[in-house]
Length: 338
Image (tube, rainbow, N blue to C red; front, side):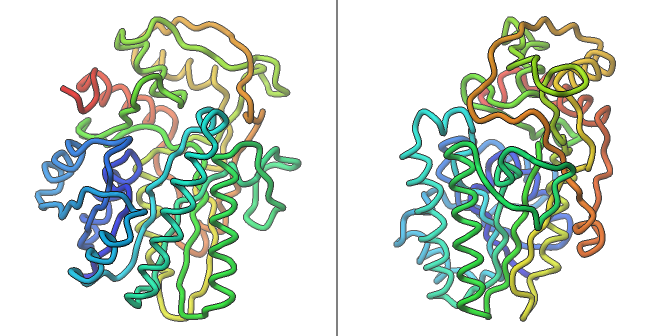
């Protein structure tokens, strides 16, 4: 059985990926400092899968810790989720974003090289496309960014490209996520933001469950069909399965591969709101506020490359997304803190 190390594996995307990897026959080790996640998510994964999680609490920037993880375990490859991830927050605390996201990656790659582990999957983001000049977005389009969070993702992509050119023994997969939403169908694991949600759907569900008074919609003057921002929303389970599919590229001589993980469809904020109301029979009061710095009007993927090369495609639609997100939130009104 091949064992994968998941940095940040207790987080939203990491926890769902743990489930899919275990159910696909992989062994997993999770390293997470729990700064934006909860150990309870790992207990829930054990409940879903019936498997015990090898969990190590710590920071990926800790060289001594990461060295011991590799010395004490036979690790086939790494999926690197760990990092700060809020676009708006990155504009206010950029130094923390550069320190956390860049130094964790550099330290991890150094330790991997020293321990002759060359299989690496990186969680990148559609933010690397900046303000799209053409849609849908294809992997070979020019890249740019509009915020420090996106800058860290683009910098790491460039580091990985340089590494792949310099050292042919690395097998690297870069996965550019679009907008992960939804939750596991069991309702046991889902998105559990600290404080005010940064993303749309947890904001909607927290209004629906009574934790928040109303939804704030950031801008209604974009060049879209209803004026609100359009995004490519992908069910988190589909995204997690994209990582399982990505492991097929971790073979000797595969070099560096880059894939969009998105549905290929764009939905506006009001589209999502209307579907949630329909599926969950919940009224969601909202107000229009100003645009957020760094946001773009439209963003959606062309996932053809992942469809063809990874045999991966999304299986859940917007209705599934809203239903599963509401099940998670209604069963866990305070997230993992109950």
